[in-house]
Every structure is written in C-alpha cells, then in structure tokens.
Image (cartoon, rainbow, N blue to C red; front, side, top):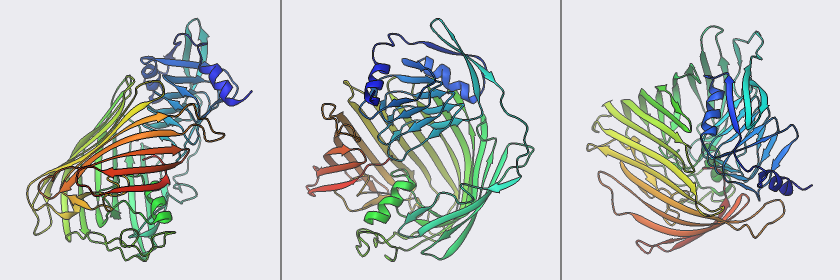
Length: 492
C-alpha cells in the first residue's frame, strides 16, 4: 500500500473523537509536561508498533500523538507532534506549527522543513503504556543504569562543532571539548575556532549550569565575530547563501569578552515562558570585508561577497540584560515572541549610554482547509543619542526587503513586518516532491538613526516546490521597481 493511502487511512474519520493520554507515574518530569499540553488541545492518537509514514501530500489539522510507532513525517501538522516510545524522523517539506518531541526516542531533524516550536528528544525517558477504554495511561519506568561518564569528552561530533561560512571570516571551524564533573549539573565547553580569512584561532568557552532545570544559567566568554542580524536567517542558511550565491545577509564586528543569563521557567499546558536576567561586557572593534572569500557566484560583486562591512567604534561596552521568551501553542494559533532589554552602564568614548529594546516574533494559524496565515516581526527601539554603531541593526535585500540593496537601511531604530498567506495547490500532486505552495506576501520595514523613517512597502508572490522557490517582489512605496529571484527555501 502506498504511503499516501496509509496516511489517509490513519488520519481519516476512523478517529472520530480524541482519545485521552494520561501520565499516572512520572508527573513532574520534563518529558511528561508535553502530555497534558497535548491533551488540552484538539488531538489525535495513533498507537501500534509498525512504521508510520505521513507523506508531503497529507495534512494533520490537530496535535498528533503517536505511541510505539517509528514516525517518518513530511506532512503539515497544525499543532504539536509527540512520539512516545519510538523515534521521530522529520523529512524535507515537513511543517509543524507546534513542538516536535520524541519521548523514549530521538527526533532526527531536517534543514528542509519548519518546526515553529521546540525540538526535544528524551531518549532516556521510558513509559509503560496501558490501554484502557477511551485512552492510554503512561507510567514512567526508570531505565538508567549507573555508568562511569568520562570527565572530558569531545564536543560535537568527534570534537568538531557546527561550522559556518561568511564574507568576513571565510570558514569558521570550531573544535572543542565537553567537561562534565561527576558532581553537580555543570557543563563546561572550551573550544577554539579557526577563521580561514583572518588566519586566527579564537579561544572561547561555553558554560551551562542546570541545563533543562526550572532555573538555569547559560554563558560564554572568549573572542568572537558578532552580528545583530542573526534573527533573519539561521547560521546554516546564511552560510549556504554566502557560499553558493555570494549573498551574506549579515553585518559584523569583532568582540572580546563575555555574557551570561539566568533563566527561569514557567510552564502551562501549551505555554512556555522563560524570563531571564543577565549581563554582557565586551571590547569591540571593526572588521573589514575584503572580497577575498570564495563563493560560487558573485565573488567580485560589491553588492554580494565583496560588499563592504560597516565599521564600528573601538572600545568597551558593559550592559545589563533583561528579557523573556514565550512559546504558545494552546490553540490553533502558534506563536513565539522574544524580548530583550539592554541597558549600558559603560560605553565607548565618544558615544552615549543607551537603553535598547529588541523584539522578535512569529505567529501562524490555519485559515481555510490547508491554507494558513503567517506573520513575522522584528523591532529595535533605542533611547538616547549617540548610540554606538555596534548596536545598529540593518534591513534590505534577501530575507527582509528584497527590492532594496542588501542591508541598505540601518540604525538604532528598526521595524520589520511581513505577512504570508500560504495556499497549498492540493489538486497538483507531483511524485516525490508533493504539491506546490503559492504564497502571497506583504512586507513593510524601515531603519534609521535616532528616528524611524517612512516605511518601505513591498508586495510579492512566491511559488514553492519542495526546497525550491521562485519569488516576484514589487516595491509599492517609492517605485524602486521589482525583483525576481530563484532560491532554496530553508528554515528561517
């Protein structure tokens, strides 16, 4: 039987009402917190032992709970996906508006899909499942055996951590160790990053205390190349666009110092709030972009790989940090909002102390059938005059306002808003890649120094097929023209 027919059979009206899944023994464990969250939402339960495949041409309109079945997921899910007692394999094209969780298994991720919530694997948490009328009972079973854990072991994969690629550092290749003392919940991760263009070795260390607990600490210190544009594209996506098409969506500066945050945790069914307080002290200096970094295309273009990097003032910045991150999947609307307030107590000579608020948010919800509406927003607001350029943020080009030049607009005030209405063309079903998705876009944004200029406005249309997308964008505010682009659609 073909996978699409299997998916239809599983997700069709055979499940006429939601079955309950209740944790009887194990309440209080982090893995167990996802169960009542799922039960409070519209959900479907699929149990068994054989392999479960949900292909690209299928849509699940509720939270999905799978018990005992290795799950291969490429479909759209309007809610959370929780696999209990098996592994969850995310495949290209998957779209999950909530969390992706494996309890007693592992979530195998893909860069060619989207998960709006968290991705969590609880490999060591095993639950015995008892079927009863109307649902299932879960009882936690201790499986850990006391073993001798090495004090020092390689970080990442055989000591190699996640590399990145950009126009100022070239290849950044971090190699490190993971140190876990037997007593206490502490992880120390010293590493060295080789930066090919600079020809330097940057030492650094990460410190994590009580990771996964209700109160935790996360900090780092060392030498880094930093950017204020990491909200737009992930490191992986930015590295890919830099190498293949010469488009680096970030500006950079060099930083020596450290920062740390103490996080709290408040959870409710479908709701997760992490407030934090912390501080940062760094010595900053500018870094140039010499156009001598390799890319498949655009190697000599001053609009691409050879694009100049804005300079920053040289000096030290010390500041306090306060903020929170909220993930909400309590209903059909899935949202994530992060806010950070930075107040400087010392700043670079010639600049003034500042208070800067940075907001970033994502909201998505279904509309009619398989159609959905998504919003993305980012904002920076700064009080005080003479803010250091190390706290400027930029807009323009790929990922924000496509018709503008790459990061054409910048300053200590910024606003970016994007709405996308996605229409899967379900009547068109192609082998292997599934159905195309037609998207209507509206984009607004601006950035400036001391004040926010009038907003740029662009409208556009996108047709996406598997990981490929074709964009047409038109400027409607200042008649700057239009732009047509072909690219790879990866998770932002």
